[in-house]
Length: 304
Image 1 (cartoon, rainbow, N blue to C red):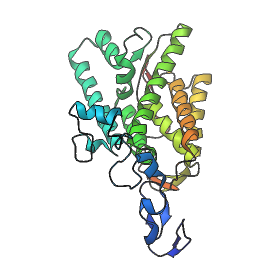
Image 2: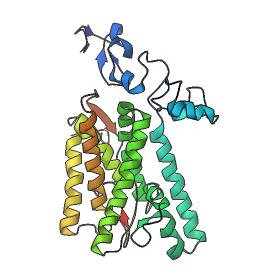
Image 3: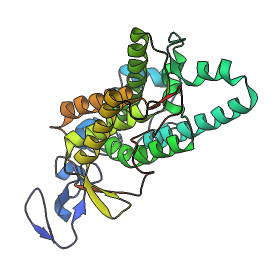
Image 4: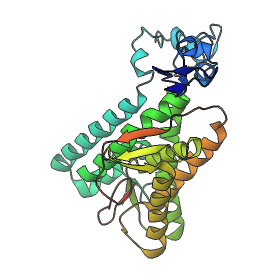
């Protein structure tokens, strides 16, 4: 038995809204019947067409939608970009693994010491290489590194994308990932220390930060058995990074990038917390043990 959040009716077979996570009876199960916050985020009060990827979908007279149409690019549900609506988590995961494959090919065919860092890492030697600010978010320092980040982004990214929409999720992921890596590199540059960084852990911690603010008691089932509130996981990762900076634990890990990404997520979560309704549990298939997103890094590389 469950209680409808809108009318209080007891239901043997309740409905859970896929957008806001609320529990409703058959009468109020549709988003437009319970004033789902997702409708406002989509800019589609009738809940029919848009999923939040392009908030200008109804702005026929101007904005990015009309510009894209003038360029011949269709972002509508049936258009070539329609797949990306609600699927940016998977798009980023695919980009991560394609970049990792490109790294392996580059390592086998190029002068790694000369070219590899200039393409795949944000570093203090050539911080003016703007392309590395973004590529380094998708690049990783090894299979364990990308595997851990993929697990975290797969489980947490899908939730955050459902809550805030694909467009805002895309901006959050890219901005937090870029600022995390760039922030650590700039601080190292100011201190006169060499730094090469790569990895999506800054973005992964941002996703955890958002969920920690929106629903701190969200249960994460580690190995589908052990229930742990997400706030506790966030505190663990934050504490690990703080100790890493203060005590020199795992010196190859981008601890500062972790904390920058987490701070961005916490700030963004506070910004939207009054607009989002969330469920109270998620099953997480597993990870690779302690070490935080990104895991231990190798010598000379800050994995984040």
